[in-house]
Amino acid sequence: MKNVLFSAICFSIAFCSFAPVASAQSGDEATFKAYLKEVYDTYEKGDTKGMFSYYADNAAEIGPDGRLTSGKKALEESWAAFEKMMDAKPKFTYNLTSYRFITPDVAIVTWDSDADIKMGGQQIGGKTVAMAVLHKKDGRWLIEFDSLTPVMEMPAEAAKGN
Image 1 (tube, rainbow, N blue to C red):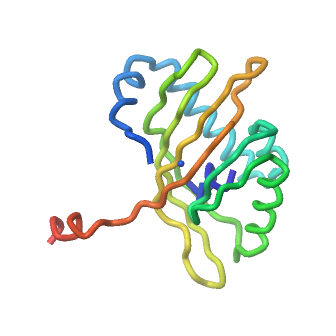
Image 2 (cartoon, rainbow, N blue to C red):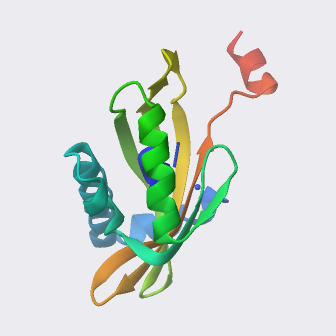
Image 3 (cartoon, rainbow, N blue to C red):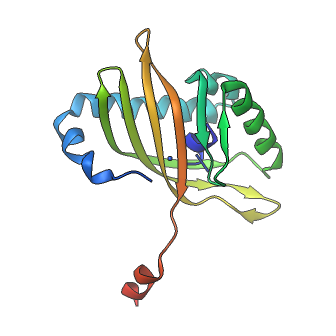
């Protein structure tokens, strides 16, 4: 969930293929926006255990450090260790950017996030692109996999701005 939250620190996909699907399914867009809000709100209320209720038991994630963590128990332990290193509770903004159904009960969602995270007085958060594979089980979406890709300015982009 670090990835979801650091977007949760917490997914690189070809985004252009999602745009036509997202624009054609506005009801689904509202569903996934509400889902992200639920996950973030649960964390912001201080309910880390509740946040992990959105994860499948065998969920995995790739954190912004490139490390793969597999299984809900390992994710919970990793998150707890990370929280101990933070100076204060992080603040997040996020915005759903796309979603795509693989099957009626499997979807890929992406969102942009900006995380205000500090460790040892140093800002480590920032802009990220997050991705999650969701699986609907018993009528409820669960995170099977998530990842976070920090947004890095490329030299060509910097030259355009000058």
